[in-house]
Length: 160
Image (cartoon, rainbow, N blue to C red):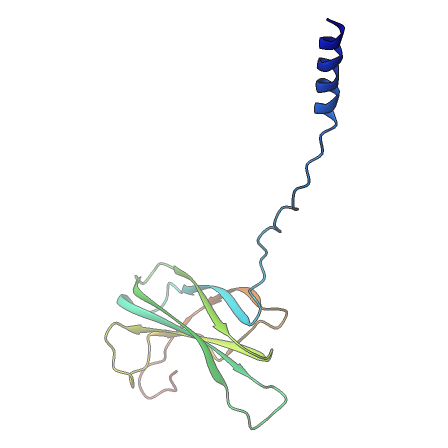
């Protein structure tokens, strides 16, 4: 009987001293974009005082350029097309999307966004646009941006 008590004691004490070697848990997902990629999470707001959009298409383009070279040309590195845009005058409409691109060398970046009528010819100007170029990604590879698009001026005025 004493050998049973001794065996049970060893099992109980041994169970409390078990050590398991396991690999550390994987790191939590971060808010940084993967190496070589850049990403902007965009919210575009169509203002209440602009024209109506029945079946529009929002086209956002991300460009990179070398700010140290005056003669360098911007290169498109990402494009997002968001079909089915609907906007009613008197109300604000928010459009959320992500524009991402691949790049080999870190440079300067800007974003453009234009809302076109569905099926518009390539030479036609849009209905809404970002006023000028929107600089992005100055502090890292990922950014959140909220911007209000402006109505494109009437014929005879500068367009996008």
